[in-house]
Structures are given as structure tokens and as C-alpha cells.
Image (cartoon, rainbow, N blue to C red; front, side):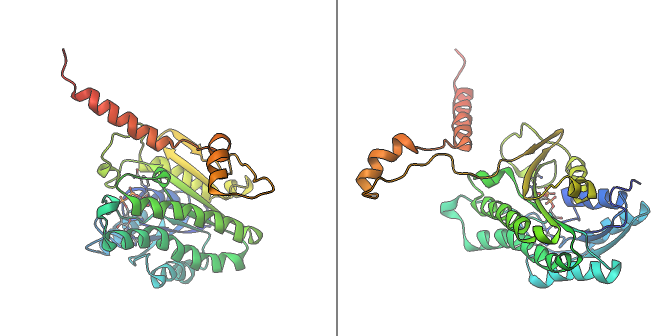
Length: 304
Ligand SMILES: NC(=O)c1ccc[n+]([C@@H]2O[C@H](COP(=O)([O-])OP(=O)(O)OC[C@H]3O[C@@H](n4cnc5c(N)ncnc54)[C@H](O)[C@@H]3O)[C@@H](O)[C@H]2O)c1
């Protein structure tokens, strides 16, 4: 066992499987006492079971660590609160929360139902809020703590997962808001966009060029939870972790601007001035889609 997180209490949501499980095991192996939260659901959010969280607690205990299971649904305020309250009751403090829980309900936008939209946004975005909200109230008084949200490269947009992409974009804004709002209390907030082999990524229709294992992501999350990251001033950041690659995303910023002359803007003036000055910022995801469509067409062409 290492001691990167010695003396810390860390709660991980979605810790029963995939990346969350790897984060919980790695945090425990580095000396943290861990709250293992998992609602134990299928990939689309159905059939909950408390056995999934309990099994990871057993694994941690078998390796000599300390952990407690909470099988609540993170999309409820009571669930988020119970995760933090259990940490306080069992271990007396909460130093880090890692919100990994997630589900998928894939559908094209023009066919997507309310039953496909609401639970996906509730699990990812509200499920990060409920835990951040409960933890932030304690961390503010402690004057220390680390909040970690899980986003996705899909926050740039997605062909058939508008619900998931919207929630993942929202998590980035929530993380940046937490970083700003809690800075003066010594609390940091960051987001991780992983690419790792799990049951969820097995569903991705296209071949992923860069992918790794949940353990790669877990090592980075342990760093983010540690005093080392706090000393390095890491807050308000979005990182990709894909196997051997770690990348930081740019902060959003205005790219180009133009100002109206004395007369203000009319639709005609906008049409005259804006295309040649402000213009557009080409969408890399759209270029990639077009490239994939060309490759698919070329593959279909018979050899002559
Ligand atoms: N695997 C990837 O390549 C990848 C890529 C981008 C983003 N992500 C994100 O990383 C996170 C982990 O994904 P994964 O691939 O490990 O998925 P996974 O399906 O293996 O694990 C997700 C876990 O979350 C739990 N969960 C679902 N709803 C819950 C709820 N309401 N309350 C508590 N627990 C709940 C599930 O029971 C499951 O054990 C997700 O947020 C996902 O969107 C993963």
C-alpha cells in the first residue's frame, strides 16, 4: 500500500464497476478510507442492486483497506446527502468526492423521449450536484477538500447522445462554478474525461483510437485528490485520461470580435460585416464525422 492519500476520507460514486471501482480500489490502496457508492444498475439505469457496492467494499477490506458501502441513487438529494453523512458518521470527515456514476440511453435527438432525457441528465449532472452540494457544505467549514466530476470528450457534441453530451457539458460548468465559488475556502474542483475499457465504452459504435484501462484513470484521480495536486494549485481544470495520454483542455474564450459602428447593428449590417470578420470557428467533431462518412463510402466501393 502507498500513502498518497494517508488519513484522507474519500467518497466515490458509481464505485461498483468500471472506472469508479478502480478509483475506489486505488484510493484505498493509497491509504484513504473510502465510501463506495453504487446504485447497482444496468447500463440504462434499471434493476438496482446493493450487492455491487458491497462487493467492492469486500475487495478493499480483503486488501487490508477500510471502506463503507452506500447503495443510494445519486440523482436524489437524499442519496447525495447520505454519501457525505456516512463519511462523517463512520470516519469523521470528508476530504474528497469523486462523482463517477453514469448511465446511457442512446437515441437520435428527433426520436428522444422524456424518459430517455431526464434520467440521463439526472444521473450525471444532478448526481454530481447532489454530492458536491452536500460535500461543499462540510468542506467550506473544514477549509479544505477536493471535488471531482466526470465528463466526456462528448461534451463537444454527440450524434446520438444529446442527453449524455448535455449532461457532460453541464458537469464542466458545474465544476468551474465550484472552483470559483469555493476557492476562498481552500476547496478545489476539477473534471476528468476518461477513455477506458468498461461495459459503457463497449457500447461506443466507432473504433476509439486512444483508449486505456480504468486503472490509468484511477492513478490520475488519486493525484488530483492528493496534497500534491492542491500544492500545485490544480483547480477549475478539465483533463482527458486515455491510457498513456493525459491532456488538459483549454479554458473557453472568445476567439474574435467586431464592434458595431455608431449606428448599431441591423440584420443587413450583421450580414455585411460579421462573416468576413468574426466568421465561424470550424467544428472539429463535424470534420471528423465527414471524414468517417468518406472512409465508409470508400470502403464500400468495389475493387476494380
Ligand atoms: N468508459 C469510458 O471510456 C468513458 C468515456 C467517457 C466518459 N465516461 C464516464 O466515466 C464514468 C464511469 O463510466 P464507466 O465506463 O466506468 O461506466 P460503468 O457502467 O462501468 O459504471 C458506472 C457505474 O455507475 C453506477 N450508477 C449508475 N447510476 C447510478 C446512480 N443513480 N447512483 C449511483 N450509482 C449509479 C452503475 O451501477 C455502475 O456501476 C461515467 O460518468 C461515464 O459517463 C466513461
